[in-house]
Length: 131
Image (cartoon, one colour):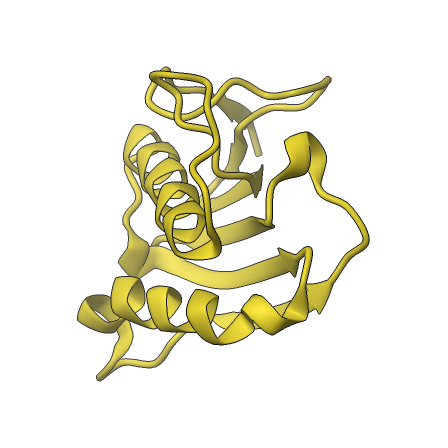
């Protein structure tokens, strides 16, 4: 299979030697996204705003690859503080409910980590599959 690198100006540039996403066949592997606004380069305050921004970045990458939130099969969530879980989880559900409430949500792991690049409060890595 051919590996296709996915990059879009609608999501933040990679902070290191990696791609925003890699598409192989019907699978899309999105690198961990933090809450950098691609227009300003800034990170918003608070877990609610950062979770929304992370999903805005994820959606932009999905769109660039011809995928949607409906195609997401797995998310790994890294939180700087696990006490932010209820707020992150509420936003996560709001974003996925229109796509998954009836058909089932993506698999997910959520862990607390000691630090995230740029002082962000969370990072989400995503895998999508499209038939």
